[in-house]
Amino acid sequence: MKNNFAEIYAREQALRAQYREARKGNDEAAMRQVRSDHAVLEGQIQEAGQAYARLYRLYASAMERGNAYIDLAEAHDYCDEAALISDMRAYGIDKFTLSSGCSSAIESAWRFTRNGCTLEGMIEINGGCKDFTTDAYEKCGALLFHVQEG
Image (tube, rainbow, N blue to C red; front, side):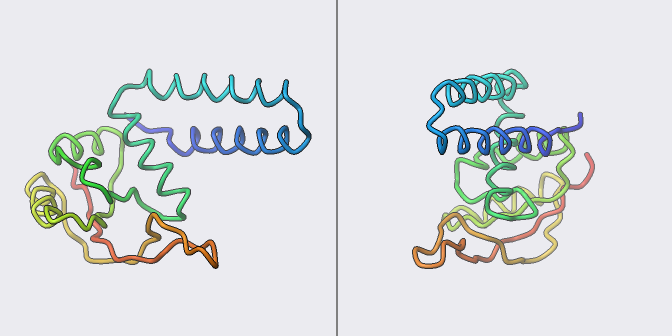
């Protein structure tokens, strides 16, 4: 399966821009239409299945923060490493980062390698929090993994 995450993300961003413009113009009808269009898009994401929706949300989060790869930062992002890696393969995701500070992150990294991922090293990514004064995302270290073909 191929993913169309970039296309869906672009559509979502276009809807956000339309909504901002409608809101700026105080155009209630346009805002209602954009909310309706967004609900349709959300429905399409959900209809594609739980794995697709999960990976799309991770992709969208990475794009919003300016990261090149999906980042697994929370334990709920990767609680079943084997299934997650299988889903990544199915949707053509070949690299991801792990920046979780959870105590089980090293064990998860080990399970990623046991499920066909190669640890390529460490990189700096944009974390999930923004600096109050600069509005820039915090920088943090992350492990970079390559998903080997199954």
